[in-house]
Image 1 (tube, each protein chain N blue to C red):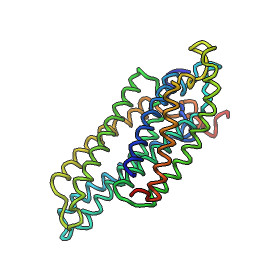
Image 2: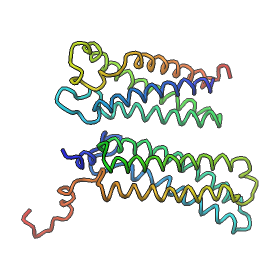
Image 3: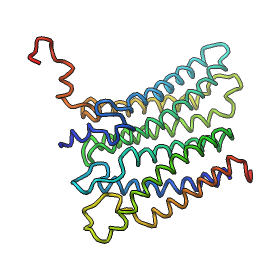
Image 4: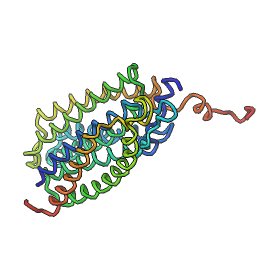
Length: 141
Length: 174
């Protein structure tokens, strides 16, 4: 269970890196002009990334040492990560709906997120959360 | 805003530190201090009579350094994103990051190399000790590049007008 959670966590992270890279490449860090400002404050997207990365490091330490407390701390961190993720999802949805109607150069950088990547990242993240919880509860161990 | 000014501004004041007060420089003190102390412990383990405590302590310091380095790297990455791409400053930042990731990886290897027998009371073996010396030397190079980013290119350093506020004399007009 520990290893399964680790694997899906890494898969989630790969998708997340893709989305972050898209956001940065499309100017998320520096709004280029009025109207292309991101609806993600930097602290939101980078906070999500840093908490998730910290959780992953904790999970790696947990997998090698077996200290149960680490599994629970990682789970709590993931709850915060999920809350931030849902916030971004809620802010992304309106940009997705207008994607067809505005020119590609205008609009916030997150409108360039590929929908399959957003969907996969969310689904695999949810699976990670469940597997981390099961591992912390010592199910299947 | 000029490219120089872009590099001075944090991408996230909360996570990377506000303008003129970055978090990254204080975070790097942990890995640098821990890894320097680890080498001192390694060498001292060949000097004292009963070196077990130094050998064990050195491994803890390596682990502490790795965890601290990951935290410093995460925040340093935010500062790298503030630097305009395609500039010498950005290339210096990339090299600084790459060398530091290599050093962190080297110390991770070092940790697992020592892990099997570090509690048996002996001095630190030549192999892990040499690896520490090499990693610390590379750290010196990447640290030099970090200093260049701050003190020559002014990345995350307040602009000169702000700097001047620290030197206003009492007899000046303001």
